[in-house]
Image (cartoon, rainbow, N blue to C red; front, side, top):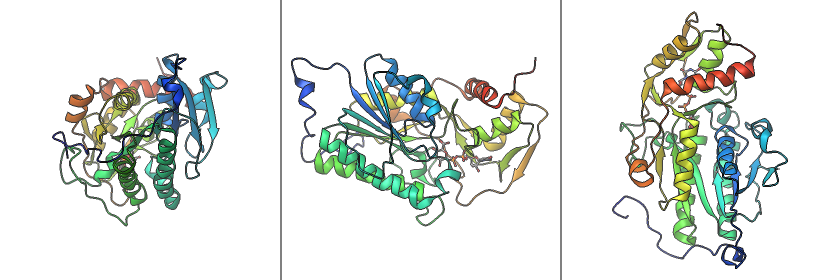
Length: 343
Ligand SMILES: O=C(O)[C@H]1O[C@H](OP(=O)(O)OP(=O)(O)OC[C@H]2O[C@@H](n3ccc(=O)[nH]c3=O)[C@H](O)[C@@H]2O)[C@H](O)[C@@H](O)[C@@H]1O
């Protein structure tokens, strides 16, 4: 281990990138693959990558939770391509960078077909690492705060190994992402692949599926529909919510920087679910009720990122506070649900 806690590559140099990169007539545009690019975070990342006016972006998605609608503005653009493909099957494309996001992230979706979830994490990551090795691409994995399980250390630094139930209903995702991280580091050590590992904490913003099932989208949709906000018991469990544009900044900085990670990306502002419900109620609909409902097994009791590494190594920290981000998401949900703001 190096002094900063990162794993060092012990063997081969990285595979050579395409000869085009070193040729006299160098292509200035990067070819970037985004798996899960039609999803919530993926589509915001695509906007950022396309926005620099040079990159060519290829999206791969099986549309289980993603939607072409999220990419509407890029469809037909000469530097943009979209492929309906499931990452559990191999893929061959010539690219320079791979952002590997593909996997359902909301507990109700990842628990819906747990065998498929773990296959996506394990075989999907193997396939993308195989592609990175073959074409000499740098690959970034979006891992998750769920690798810390129900954490006994608070806040969670990257050096914490976690407290995960290996046979619980969440393990298809938690353990799946843990294996995905292992595969990333094994390919790095054994084959010299250039890797980047981000551990993403709860993220929210426009384009989340309205019936995604995660807490911020649930509360906003419920407040707009005049339905009670469903706080899962005990309501004192905490989460830290990062606005999606901050998250995308962090992902791009990690990919472009020199550090393999793992690096936590999240907003350290910590709230109980009851506090979140109160905030949403005050902001959107003061008449709405809060109802306490049953929780699901193994729900982490506390979660807050230690972002010292992200600050020091990437010069990144989130800018948007929950109170600033929620209204932006409210606006998007109002449009999609057809609920105009009352004067
Ligand atoms: O939002 C995310 O980015 C994260 O969402 C999930 O993690 P989790 O923290 O369980 O997300 P939620 O389903 O939004 O639950 C957060 C908390 O809110 C509570 N909750 C959820 C839904 C609801 O209607 N009411 C409610 O009180 C849950 O009990 C839990 O304590 C995923 O497992 C993570 O991979 C993902 O990074």
